[in-house]
Amino acid sequence: MTLAPLLAAILAVTGSGLAEPPVIAEPLAPQRLAGEPLDPAREARVQALAKVLRCPVCQGLSIADSPSSMARAQLEKVRELVREGKTDQEIFAYFEARYGEFALLEPKAQGINLLAWVGPMALLLFGFFVILSQVRRRGSAVSPAQGGPPAAAPPAEDEYLRQVRSEIER
Image (cartoon, rainbow, N blue to C red; front, side):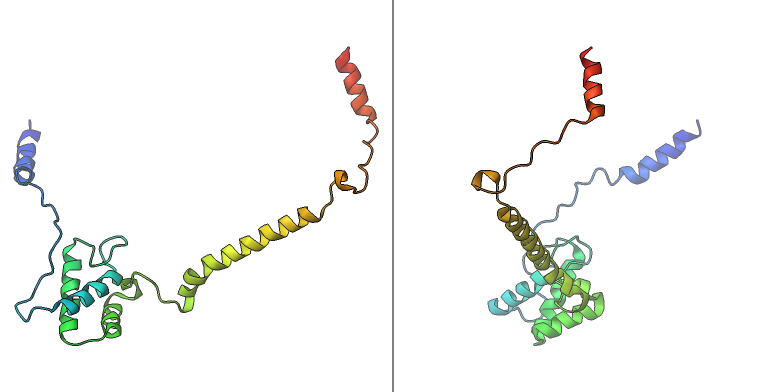
C-alpha cells in the first residue's frame, strides 16, 4: 500500500515528459551570427575545416556532420576564427590547444602516430615478401614427374603395426 503514492509521484514526475514528442535532430543550415554574414568562399572554407575537426561528443564524426549542440558551437567558433582572418593552421592549433590532438580526425604523421600511417603499409609489404618466399620455395622443389630424383621406396612395415593388423583380421 505504501508503494502506490511513491509510484504515483514517479509517474507524475516522469510522465510529463512522455506526452511531449521526441526532439529529432534535423540538418542545420549554416548559422549566422548577428555580425556580418560569411561570403560563399569563406563558408566553403569553414565547412572544409569542419570536416577535419572531430566532434568531442560523437564517435568518429566531424563537427560538420555531427548534430550535437557542442559541434554546432565549435562550428560557430570556426566561423568566428575565419571572420577574424585566422589561417587554417592557427584554427587547428586553437582546437588542439583546447581538446588535444584528439580534435583532429586524422592524426599527424609524426611521433608515435607515424605507426598509424606507416604500420599498415609495412605489414602489407611484410606479408607480400612472406608469400613470395613461400611461392619461390615451392617452385624450386622439383616434382618426380619432371625428372627429379625417384621417390624413395616405402619403408618396411613396422613389426608392431603388422601384429596389430593380424589381430584385427582375426
